[in-house]
Image 1 (tube, helix red, strand yellow):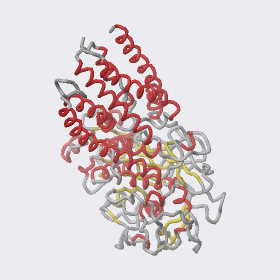
Image 2 (image 1 turned 60 degrees about the horizontal axis):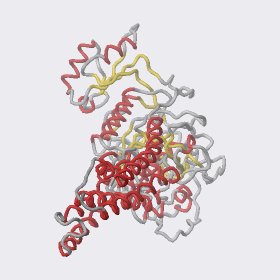
Image 3 (image 1 turned 180 degrees about the vertical axis):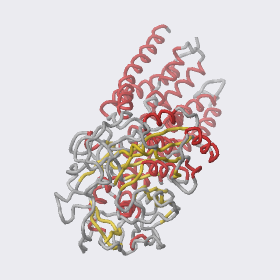
Length: 601
């Protein structure tokens, strides 16, 4: 008895020691991911600079109401200029600092006000430089290579090398984004014909949700620049309609939110309000192909708010061509995307840094001037103020970001909705990249692999539930027919219940903690039954129950390892966690054997 008890203790010590290594590695990676980017030396925008020190922006606490906001403004002694037609909806207002006043003193006063959640000076953010093709791309009759999967009949789909790079056709076999809404926070989208603009020709079958124009304070977020429509096209341009090119998640719904002017500049308060507006009006994903080198408190607060509400936020890393990820991409709530060209190597213009989560096709016309960009339908000013509706080839991290947002939509349509889980699926399924992590993140986004992984995670959980339900009934009947010999002479159902717990508990834990929590390593191990055994359990039925629990945990761990669905950080490779997996699986069978073999004390 003593020797067996000692063996169990040694087994527990070994399992703890082996589990400690991947837990420590994941914890270290989690801490590193939360660090912010350094301030970047980007060229100042043509409008005069990244910071408007004479303009103050304030985010009041949610639920403050218009009366409370006005009372706070009276206490502060300044008159607000509301950012939208409904100032109490997102609780953001802006005002000009009086001449000769100290902006920092005003900010300190605002931040100490009990009704104020965040306050900052107004900042300027832009669409990244050097993204637009000057002329419509030439038509090509070259068909797309035959992959054996379904492909759309859009005549210029063959020119979309970027979709083939991310394995779009493999993804379309399982998901096309139905039921997912993607907010495009940009220059607007050419989504309908109205007094402010037109609907682009290849968006006739695209689904649109109600949007808003935060620059003009009305409900007509039409595009007067072309950037936002091009971005929206990559996500959900009308597909298989015999016109133009395809969209990657073409069954998804686009929510157009205009925050950038026709010149491509926007105010941080407008962007912050658009983020909150999207989260409050049903957006599942936000794409922001915009940025700047200076952090902003209201924007950070808005990103945290949207993330907390379950919104996946995808952002362009920037087009500085140097190390340093811009904002909002550098915030930990956001998925920062760098850009690669047709060869899969980092594009010459792409920003990079430790905050980059993943890379995606953004184009590189230095490699291929004719076909190296990203081709989509959009509207561009012809120089006279008229908008030309055509197909244009752009390049930039602005073009890379919507690829990731679209794949996120395909993943969410498979049933994975938590933003951290979506990010984990994107990173764990990414293609290997030819360079360091700071440039490519986890690798190049792979739509086909991401959809397959999302389907496996969601589907396997459902399958395990029904498998346990059926097995529980069978085991109960068999146990009764053999007088309980399998699970114990007195309580034949206890062993089956313990096995069910072992097989299903890790799914519950991962659903509660997220797919990248290091605590999942504990929940997927046999430490729970080992610990209970070490507490001195001596009854035969209890020992057998713990043995069946250990078997359930071991089988679950082996199942997810073989399927590639183990919920751990993408930083933990198979080589790093393989010893831990082997020890736990063997320990699970060992505990079962010990429980079945030992007799009552």
